[in-house]
Amino acid sequence: MPAFSLLTPMPGLPWYLPPIWPLIFWRIQRLKAWFRAAGGPGGQMLWGVMWNGRLVIIQFSDDLFGHPSGVFDAPVSGRLRFALTDTPLPCPRRTPGPQAILSGRASRDPGLRREYGVEIPDT
Image (cartoon, rainbow, N blue to C red):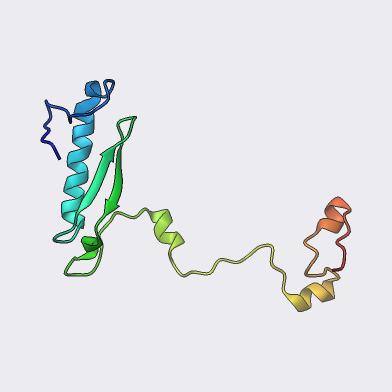
């Protein structure tokens, strides 16, 4: 990759991006620092600059998970952490078989008959 710095933009940059080059350069530095901290030894990353000035990671090498600990340290949001947990959530639309039969509501009828007046054909 050709050399670039804060005051000299990358060659081949579109004509409208040099005014925001310091912002792009700062993003590149942050991305490289994150990869040095999170990537394993010998890991490589291919990145590019999009038409709107955003950085995009094109490819990671297979050595990304080469940490001695074997754990990839990436920040994870609380919502994603909760979604990845193994806590089963109740399904509100599922009705158990015996109770549905005793209540007169068939398990194959999700309420269409009484809500919309639609009959479900037997197949």
